[in-house]
Length: 139
Image (cartoon, rainbow, N blue to C red):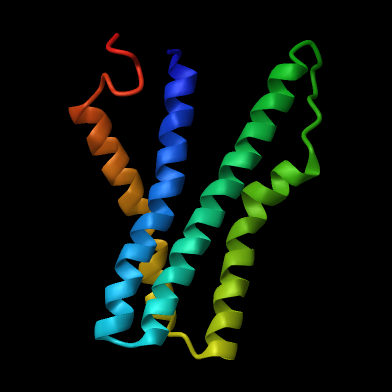
């Protein structure tokens, strides 16, 4: 298995695990604290997942456009690549603000949910350290 496919597999694991960890944390938080806090953690995890997806799509588009035009001095990059790479933080902040104002969901709970991406990345990284042969067919 090529290193590119190993990285893609790890990206997929991080993406999926972000949502799983967010849901696994949101349920007990909603039960033991309040449903608004649980919803905030879940929304934060979903936003972290969306952020990761947009970053990946933006970087993939940027990489593809640069490698597809190696002979040109100035490569053209799709506007969507810039949008998904740069504007995503503003959109996430706007979504957090709207949810905070409309649903009265605590901002801190959404920030905690945003940490699901970091937790998922840590889990996948530690897993790949201890099980480096996973996904590479034992090579």
